[in-house]
Image (cartoon, rainbow, N blue to C red):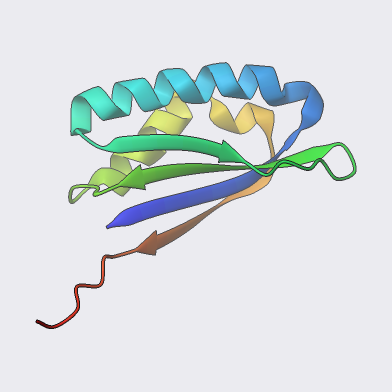
Length: 95
């Protein structure tokens, strides 16, 4: 299962959020063997940016580990509004 988490951040908090998320994702990758990405939309609207964390091929129980890591890194102090999580799985076509 791949997880996509998106949220808003004030442009003024972007550098602080970047530092927190990079540290958090490095730890998650080492502990859980997941491939992590961090993205953001190129535009800023009303002083807000939209950011997205991507976690590919997550193991069972990873969502709980991610939630704990977010709390430990205090990521929410830099975001505006809720973190929205969407899960996708690979679709393997029939042979």
